[in-house]
Amino acid sequence: MSRTLTGPVPASTLWQAKRASPDYQKAWFSAPAILLIAAVFVIPLAIVLLQSLYREGFTLQGYEQILGSTLFWRILRTTLEITLEASLISLLLGYPVAYFISQLNRTQRAIAMIFVLLPFWTSILVKSFAFIVILGEQGIVKNLLRQLLSYELSGSMVFNRIGVMVGMVHFLIPFCVFPILNNLLAQPPELRRAALIMGASRRQVFFRVTFLLSIPAIVAAAAMTVVLSIGVFVTPALLGGRRDMMVANLIDYYTREALDWNMAAALSIMLLAVSGALIWVLSRVDNADRH
Image (tube, rainbow, N blue to C red; front, top):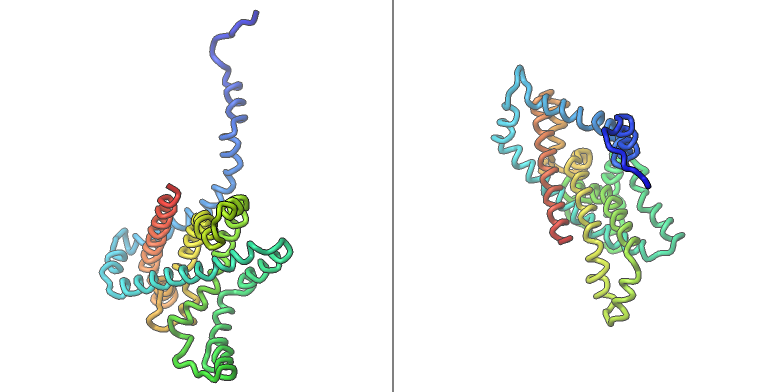
């Protein structure tokens, strides 16, 4: 007959039980990642925030100047337009590419993914200069239109919104393809086969099964493209015109030319806030779709 021992549990026993718990082990193994995030993101962000509030003493003068500036609101509108347009075009082009790759066998899929990864092999600065040559007046695109179709394209394709869209979409498409492709490959094929057996056409199977199940991946791809495109400044600076200036270009101006670090830091914090607001909206859309 066993007896139940009562009394205080030794501290060493409690410590050993705590160390053996899964939550403690997860926290211990995640500590290096948390320290790395703090070192490369939280601490620099805190420095930028303090810089935005300091100009010969703590002040909100930088934020007041920004919010009262017509130039800032015009540039912010341009930034949102370019960001949303580039993200939407990237999704419209990236989804068919991801769907096509998902239908290939393993070997063909590996080759196709190499071509999708090609834009990562070259700097965005080099690619922007390359697009100036490709889309210029004597570039490959216009020469092909002249020689093959005898068509003279009126207007320029660079130093305007067209050049910005081409450069940014070329950069963003891989970030749309891979999340969507991963989702499409993870979808159970039995669902599509069951829908076909029940009499649905392939078009109905795609829109009512495949596409609906891939909406979370679409939202994730949209979030990544929005975050990446809202802070781009090289592409609009090289391929855009005077009306295509983005907030990141304004930050670059205050940092390198005006040397006004207070304004540059305040603009950076406000750009981060706008980016966070867009991500919050996308997360709400994703949650609404899940429910």
